[in-house]
Image (cartoon, rainbow, N blue to C red; front, top):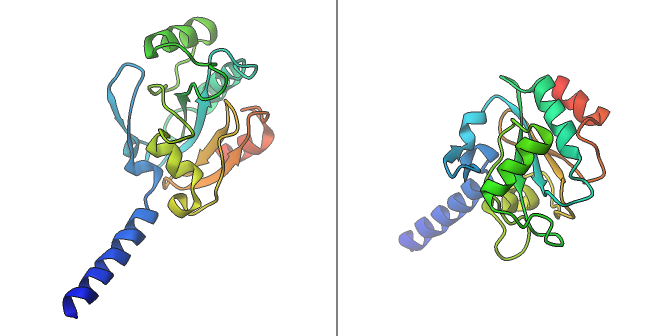
Length: 178
C-alpha cells in the first residue's frame, strides 16, 4: 500500500510539474541549425509568431522588424517560427527562408528552424502555446500564418493575437511598454 501511495504521489507531482512548464524550458533550432535555449530569454517579453514567405500576411515581416528595431534588446524580442501548415505557403528550406527574410525584409530578429504549428507533428513549443493544460492560460488553435503569442518575462503565455492583428497594434505596443 505504501508503494502504491508513493507512486500515486509521484504521478501527481510529475503531472503538476509538467503543467507548470514555461516557455523558457524549451530548446529550439535556429535557421542555421544551432540549438537555442529559450531560457536565455528570461527577463524579456517575447512575441512569438509563425511565419510564411508566400502568404497574404507576409508583409507583416516589415512591421515585425520595425517592432524589433524599436523595442528589441534587453527587455523584448521577436522570435519567428516558419511553418508550412497552411496551403504550402512556406515550402522552402531553412536556408531559403533565411535568404528570403534578409533580402526582402532585412529581418534581424531571431528566426527558428521551420516547424509544424498544428497536427500530429506539432512542435512541442506550439503544443505548449496552444494547450491550456500546459500553458496555464488558455487553449488556442493556430488558425493561419502570422498568429502572435505574447510571453512575459517569466516565460508565461499572456495573450494571443490572430493573423489580422498587425504587430504594431496599440495593444501589443502597450504590452511591450508596460
